[in-house]
Length: 266
Ligand SMILES: Nc1ncnc2c1ncn2[C@@H]1O[C@H](COP(=O)(O)OP(=O)(O)OP(=O)(O)O)[C@@H](O)[C@H]1O
Ligand SMILES: [Mg+2]
Image 1: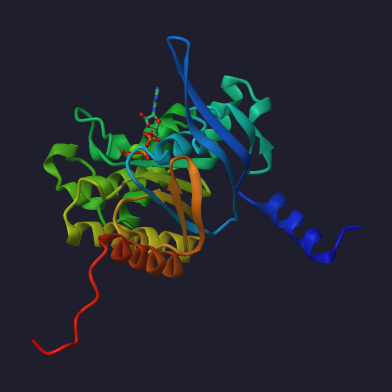
Image 2: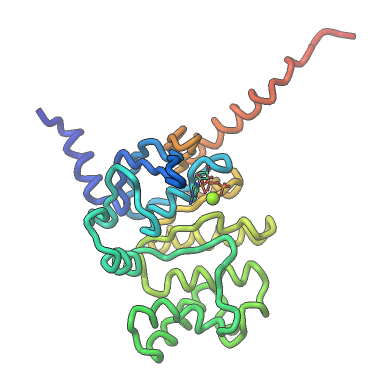
């Protein structure tokens, strides 16, 4: 029998922008299998803001590459915006990727010989939009990130934080509902990182954009609503960010194994 609760869950899963079930991933080289992900379940509803944390090698980038349709899971299912990605051809995957996902990378990945505006317009050019329309939309996105007056410069004439904001404008130029960002503040100083995180927060709150980002920093994860912690390819925690970060701080304190403070007089 189906309980009302189970029914509600099923509806949520269908509405989810990202829905993975039992996702496994192995890499094969020289006949040797390296298992990296061991059955990950995750449903990300529209409007969510999720930070993924975990030690180096825990599988964060592997998972993000699967979300971004840049790599395929070895097992399990992945529905992106209601579409079963495992049934899609390479061309169809590229189409759904372009329509649904904006990518932001740690190293910005801007093209040095192109102007800022040309960089931002590029995804639209690839999608077959005319140069004039793509350029006009690029200027709109640059204005939104406060960099319209930098449109004619080249990326190397900008600071790291400005370059990352250009990359965010580029990610958003095609109006995707989802941003995937793998350590977007990894190359930035603390203050600039906070500025970038406030931009993400604003995009999430004001434009309803769903954000999934990987970070090593609890201070960065604190900007998100939800936290997922990975350990050796398993989900260690999935829930509210504040609670997860508190739990993490406590377990790290315990791991330091500090002796109890002595209250006895010397
Ligand atoms: N192409 C590949 N071939 C073989 N093994 C790989 C490949 N890519 C990743 N791995 C392995 O998968 C595991 C997870 O890697 P992944 O890049 O997802 O980790 P991560 O959590 O993103 O780490 P980091 O914080 O260092 O970026 C690692 O043990 C890595 O060596
Ligand atoms: Mg990584």
